[in-house]
Image 1: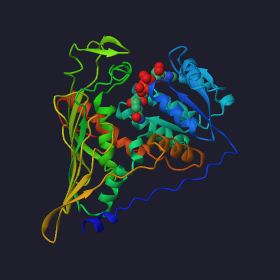
Image 2: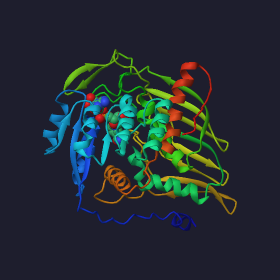
Image 3: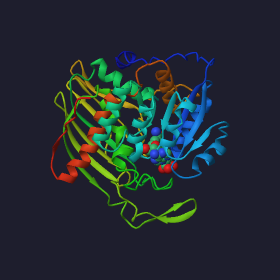
Image 4: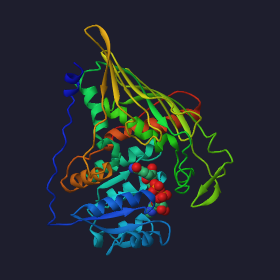
Length: 392
Ligand SMILES: NC(=O)c1ccc[n+]([C@@H]2O[C@H](COP(=O)([O-])OP(=O)(O)OC[C@H]3O[C@@H](n4cnc5c(N)ncnc54)[C@H](O)[C@@H]3O)[C@@H](O)[C@H]2O)c1
């Protein structure tokens, strides 16, 4: 019985598509920090891509990056505006926006207005207003934005959606999601994740966006209606000395975001979403992800270092012939030799070059962002708030 249930969710691995190498896709990268390294490595694996422009606000940083990755022929710029002002010469087909959260919106909107499709790193941005402005610019320019949620391409994540779509769980009415790290404030890589002027939001947006995407994508991204939010910074503000590049460093004075956040969200369709996320806590996990339905419920185990992956075999709890039964959904193997990051890059390029739909569209992630910024706003106001999203 269990096997026949699982057979219905059989994975459908996409066949390798043939890549047209007769023309090179001209790519620019805005922000040459940590995550840009993953972007360049992935672009360099694509046989039809030429990275022709690199931009970073910090003088000399793009040049060092160019040298490190041997991006011969790439032109280096300071602010993204300098790079985009040279678009007539550069003729960029696509850009990756790899800046810290606070400049996601401006870099994306300016790129769209220069006529260039954008692969935007997660989280989408910081505020709901910025997210709406991105969506409007996308509509006005007709150029796509895909948001960089690589877990979307994990077959285990796709399985969660398949299980919900199959109807096996019946009507979904309650979801708990989130996760976190026991001690994992991301300071070893610099301070752009923890300073308000660069990050804007902390654990809430950094890893919370993945938890929300895991469940919201599975249930078809219903509109969030209200949110009651909480956030705190007890751990970030503790005068603890970390080791960075082999040297002791202390960040309490710089820490300007949340290290823990929680929210209670009402979604269209009468579904309740209960969410919590931590960069630091005295607990192994703030809970597994659970999706409860009228015919069955799904438990998705948490992970140690929450970054949007499935932590172990999932379990469906349901009654079979009136008997409470548990069906194990084993962990599926992703395609060998292709990282989720490579799929994120390739699927964006294919969509950008063929006027296709964005693989991770802003029409969905707008709702994810509305919840993140709604949690922050609700906490600041000290009350539950209505989420008002204007027509795009
Ligand atoms: N998808 C993932 O797995 C993943 C992993 C890590 C980080 N990220 C995301 O990537 C983003 C960047 O993170 P990071 O760790 O690389 O940060 P970082 O601070 O190392 O790099 C960001 C760079 O952007 C530059 N920058 C900012 N505004 C700019 C502008 N207007 N023009 C040109 N350059 C500009 C900064 O000078 C900096 O060098 C964050 O939003 C983060 O959430 C995603």
